[in-house]
Length: 112
Image 1 (cartoon, helix red, strand yellow):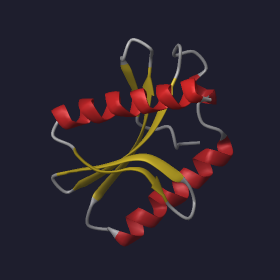
Image 2: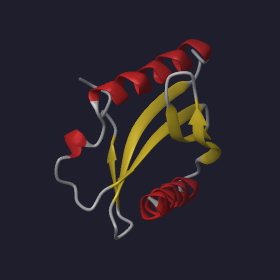
Image 3: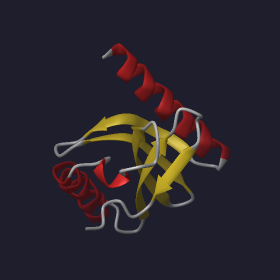
Image 4: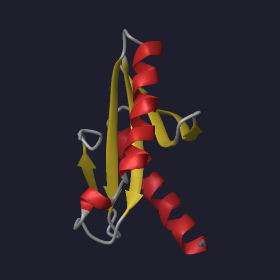
């Protein structure tokens, strides 16, 4: 379990460093909501970016990275934020981090 936690922390760090370099400001990590925990919340020029981070050994079977149940819970978080901040552009991306540190972004992972 410790190894898994360290991989998760490493992946979240990789994603945060990547986003900082692109002008995103981190707001909170591991944000607990009534519906789900979101790995990272970032802001930039009127945009809010929610990021779910997954550590994977390869890019195969990405469709299994997030269960249907988890997608539903994360969609509830997104819907709630859209209601609370209608003036903001709210994005929700999945960041898949490989052992090399390479990030694969999946921008429509909540789509059915």
